[in-house]
Image (cartoon, rainbow, N blue to C red):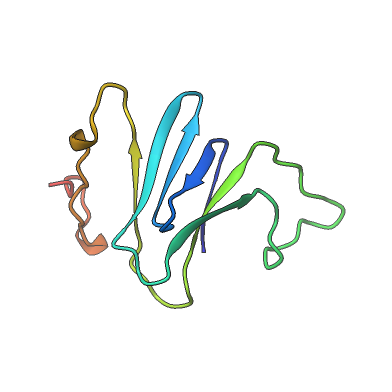
Length: 114
Protein backbone atom coordinates (compact mmCIF):
# COMPACT_ATOMS: atom_id res chain seq x y z
CA UNK A 1 0.00 0.00 0.00
CA UNK A 2 1.28 3.45 -0.99
CA UNK A 3 -0.06 6.49 0.88
CA UNK A 4 0.23 10.25 0.42
CA UNK A 5 -1.31 12.79 2.79
CA UNK A 6 -2.67 16.03 1.31
CA UNK A 7 -4.72 19.06 2.27
CA UNK A 8 -6.21 19.07 -1.24
CA UNK A 9 -9.68 17.88 -2.18
CA UNK A 10 -9.23 14.48 -3.84
CA UNK A 11 -11.41 12.89 -6.49
CA UNK A 12 -10.61 9.46 -7.94
CA UNK A 13 -11.72 8.51 -11.46
CA UNK A 14 -14.18 5.65 -11.93
CA UNK A 15 -11.42 3.25 -13.05
CA UNK A 16 -9.29 4.06 -10.02
CA UNK A 17 -6.13 4.70 -12.06
CA UNK A 18 -6.05 8.48 -11.80
CA UNK A 19 -6.92 11.12 -9.25
CA UNK A 20 -7.35 14.88 -9.30
CA UNK A 21 -6.23 17.01 -6.36
CA UNK A 22 -7.47 20.59 -6.02
CA UNK A 23 -6.40 23.21 -3.51
CA UNK A 24 -6.84 26.98 -3.57
CA UNK A 25 -7.72 27.05 -7.27
CA UNK A 26 -4.76 24.87 -8.28
CA UNK A 27 -5.05 21.37 -9.75
CA UNK A 28 -2.71 18.38 -9.75
CA UNK A 29 -3.46 15.21 -11.70
CA UNK A 30 -1.94 11.95 -10.48
CA UNK A 31 -1.94 8.81 -12.62
CA UNK A 32 -0.69 5.25 -12.24
CA UNK A 33 1.20 4.53 -15.46
CA UNK A 34 0.82 1.01 -16.80
CA UNK A 35 -1.02 -0.05 -13.63
CA UNK A 36 -0.48 -3.64 -12.59
CA UNK A 37 -3.62 -5.75 -12.36
CA UNK A 38 -5.62 -4.76 -9.30
CA UNK A 39 -3.78 -1.48 -8.62
CA UNK A 40 -6.09 1.45 -7.95
CA UNK A 41 -6.34 4.74 -6.14
CA UNK A 42 -8.64 5.10 -3.17
CA UNK A 43 -8.88 7.83 -0.57
CA UNK A 44 -9.39 7.85 3.19
CA UNK A 45 -9.39 10.09 6.24
CA UNK A 46 -6.00 10.74 7.83
CA UNK A 47 -6.34 8.34 10.75
CA UNK A 48 -4.15 5.48 11.91
CA UNK A 49 -5.09 2.18 10.26
CA UNK A 50 -5.56 -0.97 12.36
CA UNK A 51 -2.29 -2.49 11.10
CA UNK A 52 -0.20 0.68 11.67
CA UNK A 53 2.23 0.97 14.56
CA UNK A 54 0.82 2.47 17.75
CA UNK A 55 1.93 5.83 19.18
CA UNK A 56 4.43 5.75 22.06
CA UNK A 57 2.95 5.01 25.51
CA UNK A 58 1.06 7.97 26.96
CA UNK A 59 0.71 9.69 23.57
CA UNK A 60 -2.27 9.89 21.24
CA UNK A 61 -2.67 10.82 17.59
CA UNK A 62 -3.46 14.46 16.90
CA UNK A 63 -6.52 15.12 14.74
CA UNK A 64 -5.88 15.89 11.06
CA UNK A 65 -8.84 18.04 10.00
CA UNK A 66 -8.94 18.72 6.28
CA UNK A 67 -6.31 16.08 5.46
CA UNK A 68 -7.07 13.31 2.97
CA UNK A 69 -4.93 10.27 2.29
CA UNK A 70 -4.52 9.25 -1.35
CA UNK A 71 -3.84 5.51 -1.40
CA UNK A 72 -2.71 3.05 -4.03
CA UNK A 73 -4.03 -0.37 -3.10
CA UNK A 74 -2.15 -3.31 -4.57
CA UNK A 75 -2.67 -7.02 -4.18
CA UNK A 76 0.20 -8.82 -2.45
CA UNK A 77 3.19 -9.26 -4.74
CA UNK A 78 6.18 -7.53 -6.28
CA UNK A 79 5.63 -4.58 -8.65
CA UNK A 80 7.28 -1.84 -10.61
CA UNK A 81 4.99 1.08 -9.89
CA UNK A 82 5.12 4.37 -11.83
CA UNK A 83 3.07 7.32 -10.61
CA UNK A 84 2.96 10.52 -12.66
CA UNK A 85 2.27 13.84 -10.91
CA UNK A 86 1.14 16.53 -13.41
CA UNK A 87 0.51 20.08 -12.15
CA UNK A 88 -2.14 21.68 -14.36
CA UNK A 89 -0.61 25.07 -15.18
CA UNK A 90 -2.87 27.96 -16.24
CA UNK A 91 -2.91 28.62 -19.98
CA UNK A 92 -1.84 25.11 -21.04
CA UNK A 93 -3.99 22.66 -22.99
CA UNK A 94 -4.18 18.92 -22.30
CA UNK A 95 -2.08 18.35 -25.45
CA UNK A 96 0.76 20.40 -23.89
CA UNK A 97 1.33 17.69 -21.28
CA UNK A 98 3.64 14.85 -22.28
CA UNK A 99 4.20 11.66 -20.32
CA UNK A 100 7.96 11.27 -19.83
CA UNK A 101 9.72 8.15 -21.03
CA UNK A 102 10.21 5.34 -18.55
CA UNK A 103 13.81 4.91 -17.40
CA UNK A 104 14.70 1.78 -15.38
CA UNK A 105 15.92 2.65 -11.90
CA UNK A 106 19.26 0.98 -12.66
CA UNK A 107 19.76 3.56 -15.44
CA UNK A 108 18.93 6.70 -13.47
CA UNK A 109 21.41 9.54 -13.63
CA UNK A 110 21.35 13.31 -13.44
CA UNK A 111 20.48 13.34 -17.16
CA UNK A 112 18.16 10.33 -17.37
CA UNK A 113 15.29 12.51 -18.62
CA UNK A 114 16.53 12.06 -22.20
